[in-house]
Amino acid sequence: MSLEEFIPEIDSSEWGWQSSDKIKGISEKYKETSKKSQTGIKKIQKDEKKAKKYDFLLANFLVELILKKKYDNLLSFLFISLDKWYWTNFLLWILSLIYVPISNEIRSISKKELINFSYQIKKQKIKFNDDYLDINIKNRINEWIEDIESVLFIERSEIISIKILELIKKDKSIVIFIGEVFKFFFNELNIDISKQKVDNYSVFIISELVKMLKTNFLNN
Image (cartoon, rainbow, N blue to C red; front, top):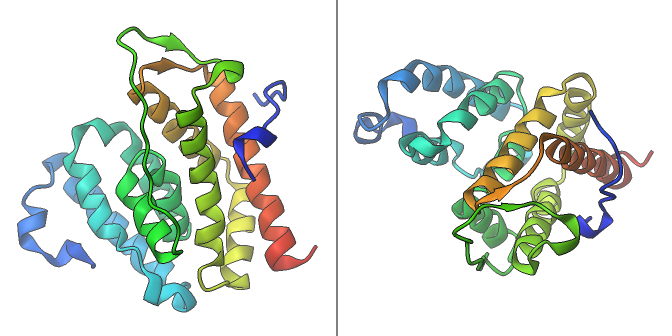
């Protein structure tokens, strides 16, 4: 699965929380939400026994993200997903597009080359264009999409795969979450991308994920 398979014309409308030193650094407005997310993480992990030894320490990454104000708008989408019991490693994968340390954790466990994203941000905002997307950006997105396969194949679990499929089928918020991350990624590069294009890409990525799960895990 890669960006090249996307058809633009398609239309789609540590547990580090126990460390008091780290907790002190979290802004007041997220303390209560963080407690709720911890509960969500624990619930989800009961269903992740096979992948337990590959725990990516979501709590630590959450602390890092919460401390950086620029991620504020994305946290609510993340916590909504946690409350719905999405697999923690799956959520980490979504965030990895905009936070390279997560990508490198995934790729290190999968014994893949680490991320070396090099793109010269233009001073003037440019408009997103499928046909003229910088090769460095395209490669970064392809690496991100590729990493979902790594996450899914780490300690293959049919139970987790079925759970993800069921959640995706009845819940559209994950598409919105992916879209918000996608939009954030381009905004950080000073590239203007339309909501319709973000929605199209989000739906495409989810549809490819569903195909991958059915083909490799459920055989139907």
